[in-house]
Amino acid sequence: MSILNKILAEALQAGASDVHIIVGLPPLIRLHTELQRTDYPITTAEGAKRMAEEMLGPERMERFEQNRDIDFSTEVAGLGRFRVNAHFQGGTVAIAMRAIQDRVRPLEELNLPEAVSRMPHLPRGLVLVTGDTGSGKSTTLAAMIEKVNRHYAKHIITLEDPVEYSLKSNRSAIEQREIGQDCPNFASGLRHVLRQDPDVILIGEMRDLETTRAAITAAETGHLVLSTLHTNNASQTIERIIDMYPETEQNQIRSMLANTLQAVLSQVLFKRIDQPGMVPGVEVMICTPAVRNCIRENRIFEIPNVIETNRAIGMQSLDESIKTHYLNGRISRDDALSKASHPDKLQQAMCA
Image (cartoon, rainbow, N blue to C red; front, side, top):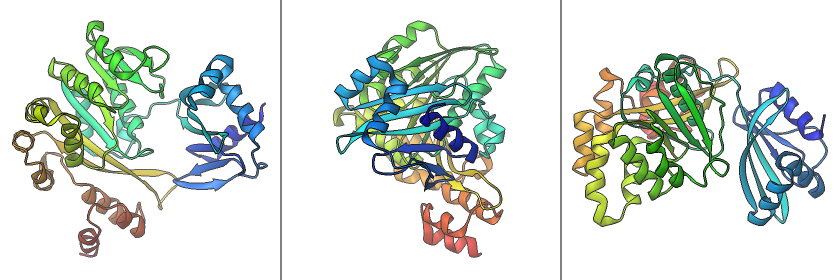
């Protein structure tokens, strides 16, 4: 077994989510959000390069050395799949690897609000899962796709950079296209996807205007489109999408978004204190007529109040979710306040 595979095996055994290879440091692992050093020797420049070559092979290694950055997924026999970014820093190779679970956990196991379990049953529209890197967006999306796969005979096409969870067709037929391997970029994949007769489209990330425009068009034409953004709440998500467009098109996109958007879930992961593992804090915005009017009329600032006053239909603010986790003894007070949208208000609510 190579040194890299030994590091990965021990990281998985410890329950780590990430492994970092950086020249001048021993291999690092992230365990329940905290970065920890391993007992392995300090990584040398030659050692880091060998690890990259081991995963990439000659052709991709040459491309990596030219571009200085590469995203890919790799499967290690007996260990599982990993999402990998290799890059250069200080003139030497560095590697960040994230473990991808073989098993797609059902939505019911993810400690998500009940309203989320209804979203895979939507016939059409745009559903966005947002949050920082490492907030569990991919896990939530994979669970949604798997629920569609269990319940419906549909054609599901995913566009991912790279492919993370390996999804197996059940009642549905699933095609997973990897950016760089199966199509050059998200925009190109989306330009052709509507000719491939999909029912459900998963887009790894709406990272530019062309991709966003194509995603909204697909949702408008009767498809269920699932995607992600690196935003912290529903209001910021809507504003980010609108701001991608030229000012002359923003009124039109408000109208299109008001018609197609179905829901926004914004996630933050917390380290549990009652048992090993993580639990998500989640803001849920469902597109009711009131929300659609806020989007259409550019009253985005009113959306947090709409969320607060519609708990009965499954909406919830991030702070409400955090408060529930804290009061149930799942997360620490300090962690709760550090990730709250309004720490002062949450502190008062936690003491009430």
